[in-house]
Image (cartoon, rainbow over all chains, first blue to last red):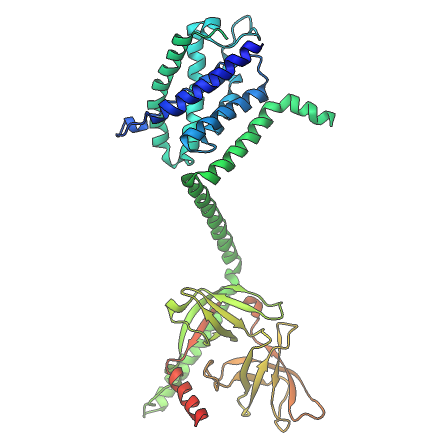
Length: 173
Length: 275
């Protein structure tokens, strides 16, 4: 129990600094690469233990988003997307539920449920997160072309970072 | 209380989510310039849209009355035209100045009006850009509406006839007696005509017209009819109650009266006072 809180806190800090200090600077110009925003911090919300109470899950999503906002200088933007992802998590979990159901003591990781399952799960979560974030960032659907381009270009690269995170740390919970 | 807790347990996620999203939304529009601008311009757009729709509906509801007014005004103009044609036939010698050429009329629309306050004002959709200046008269086809007291670039503020300080030079032009028309407050339909001497022969139903002395309104503009009159003891003048022809509650299209050589005439008057 204590170890999972410790791991979660460490993951929170690590992801905030990695996203806020490194990925935040990774911004290129140009007609295509200008639309590239590498966003991998939602992996924190994805990996929270399955038994996390839903209000806490949403609040933690909001909290990590707010921490990211400090670095991006955009109060409320990432926080709203984080809270949304926290709220959204129960749907992919329901759609991808294994035949025997989940073990509530586990976290949804590669080592617990396998690569196949995790890729589907993280793609759904990241897709929802990025779509919500780009909509809120544009704040009007007048820029739908930009929203779409942002999404199409940022999604695969962010996905790559999430996969690398799993390969490198191979977290159990 | 227990119900409340149960509600939270059942829907806690959704409630926390909605609460946090509202908080985020407020933060976004508060602290992010671009989002702030988008939000408030959208709000403005929406407000403007609502206003435009309301105005359109109101216009539609008022159409019948506007048509009636315009028809009446048209009829009057025809009468005038006939009169002019008749006169042209009669007059072989052309007049060197027709009375009408002295005045210019600037059409305007009333966008704000009140009638039930102690002092009432109107706002018109014309301003300095249209040639409107303070102290110009405002009339409709049924009589005097008020006097312009302030103008901005595109709007004019008008002191209504229904204002305690409004004083209009008017009287019985047929009989040649003139006084001032004031509004004592109360009903927007009745005004008082002051300073008509007791020896004048007034009767109920007599037409009250503007005098044209003040260089604000043209002369012979009908105002109303005498409703009742009385002779107060110890006073040398009548107290005359006048029922207005114009329903101030319904003024919609008006004309601002411009007298091009007004300044010249005023200067002359001032010179006379100073001498």
